[in-house]
Amino acid sequence: MRKIALALSAAGLALGLAAAAPAAAQTVPPKTISAPQAKLAAVCTVNDNGVNFRGGPGSQYPVLGKVNKGQNMNRRGNTGDWIMGDLWGGPTGVWIYTAYLDC
Image (cartoon, rainbow, N blue to C red; front, top):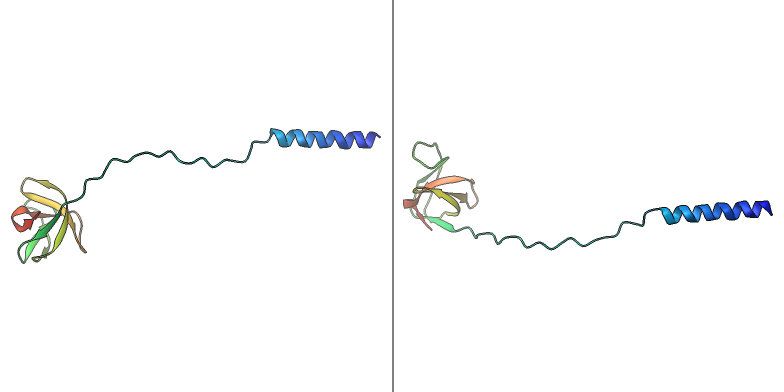
């Protein structure tokens, strides 16, 4: 009889421990947060052949390369008459003088 009482006591202890254990982690859906609408980048097209693109907004910055008429660029910003952007299929963050671009 004592063995049965010990067995029941141990079983109760095990049940008590199982009940005290934290429940399995529940999956909580993430909160839906509306992101601000991103501005669409304007696409500019080079309008002449042999146009320099530079490392900064001015002729004092080094020439990084040349592009030809029809080359597209995603405009990211400007400083004065210089437009900074990413050339399609080429370098990013380059500067071209506005007279050589149609945006």
